[in-house]
Length: 528
Image 1: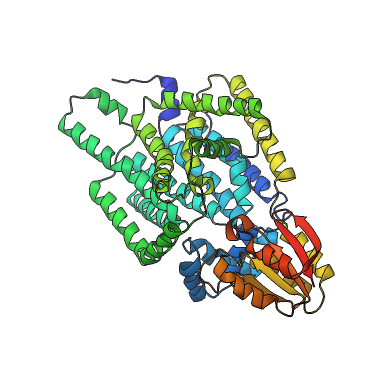
Image 2 (image 1 turned 60 degrees about the horizontal axis):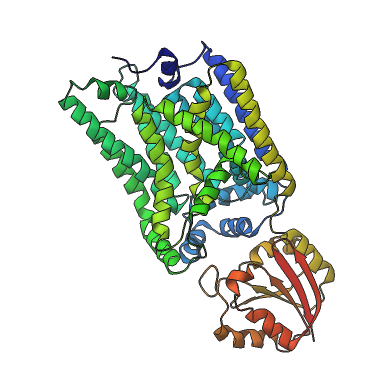
């Protein structure tokens, strides 16, 4: 007995197309959407200067691979895959636009992978709408223009989801070739391992998948034992769980490939547990993360932001309603969406790690549900209106991002200091690692200035962000002895110099001659 209409079938049957659309037309639409996503990701990609984390990516990736791994374990909290890929990418240059283009490449490639995932679960129209949602999402455009690992993380998860959806829809079907099925298994394993080696919080991805697959296998076994349950039969007809032995072999392969990194993962996790800068999440933190997934940088005041919530929330609810007749698809998407949110929240009860950028891949199931809701719009004219509203909302948000989103102005600060530098000036950095983005621009001037850090020189303390304490004041005083002029490059001081000990020591020994503020940092010139 069927429990859904023919119109719903066109939406939910894996691989089904709607309104008789030819596959070539769908591919052309996908190509156009992907090109749109590429254009948005490359637009003005090198216009903004590098901020601290991006400069750190370059600094890390410039090392030989052995040194890179050693530094990662000692001072960083991330796995090696992104830095390793960037290491080879830098062979062609290290300018802002080129460095960021690696992320733009991964982010653009994610669009067709995500389309394949949603198309397999919910049909052609939903797949294309999902691809559009991702292509124009300001949150993803932002991290496609950042030399960090988050675009790669999303790419890896999307690849794993595409392979997983194919396996769930095609496992056991005779029409599927054995070679293609084997390739899907290999792809799922490799993409999952790539995610795990891109960000340590990606452990929530295989956890989410197993939270769906293992109960799904149990339900199917019970159904086989009770074939007289037609509701369960029809409800689960579209997705088929993989064979248990195949699934366990895949999980074993993932663990085996990730295992060499596990020791470093434990060491990095202990470092994060001992000391990390994030505040404990609140309900508002979660709502803010959801909003940036939907329309980051949307500039309007609260009433207009409410309209954004209503627009996406309405289609999300419709998507949930439509997926009710396919509980397997619904359970998969909800597991993928909720598991990382709940998981990071639970970990944050002991050590806060909840952060929207680490959850970036959890936006994919959210977009998928919204896409299912939009695909259910009955008339093309109404769908066109809905898509126009989507383009308007995201267009306004993207315009605000391109025009007004600012990154730390190390480029301007380095140029200002270089124009006023005098021989024997000391360049003093708080937070020590803020020297990295400053040097990225200052080294281009060819000035060989002495650079020192407080409380320690660059990474001499063996930690990424050492905090200035009273015990470090005598060393700072020794650095200031016999100095005529000192430049203080001051950034992230709220965290690394909470007691303002550095500025107090300088104010005691010197007169303040110049003070210039740049976005995210400040330059101060002291002289006796």
